[in-house]
Length: 229
Image 1 (cartoon, rainbow, N blue to C red):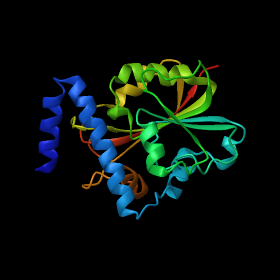
Image 2: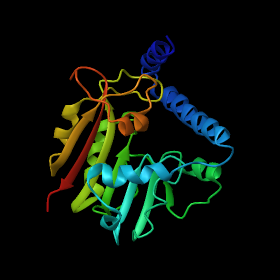
Image 3: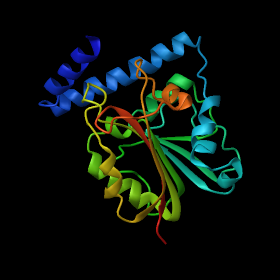
């Protein structure tokens, strides 16, 4: 029932984009403040390293000397583990608020900006990741274009996003597996789809490696793309 209400409100707000953006950002901050309170003031991020490395068949050394970007990074220090990278940046429309939440304790950079107009030159990063954030953006196709633009030739693009999930307040887009085909200048290194738990925990579902048996049902797509030279 609660999920149905969220979807109904999401559809209603889609008719008022400015209000939708404000409500969406308010919900994001509320979620992270609640998470921080439950964690007694300490964000936990150690589990994330797996999703940037072994989950996609990469290792820690793959990041050595690389410029790394996490789009829709959140406040938990998603790239803190990548100590061997030349640069590690988290981009988020709420980055300034997130730095206040995490009290600036992280070594990675936080840059405030939209995924639809990233404040970086072309080919700025050797590895770009966007995890559980693509359905949160204002404009999916503009974001796809920017992800392509800032990834360097022969660079890696790592994506995790939900498919066939009805729009909600914070996730206003329903995406599908065919979205991968819009990354025209990339080769697909791997693409897997997993099922999602009843509690809708994306990372927990991936850790459990739930099977996705019905192509039309909700799931989680995980893709490793490599930009053509």
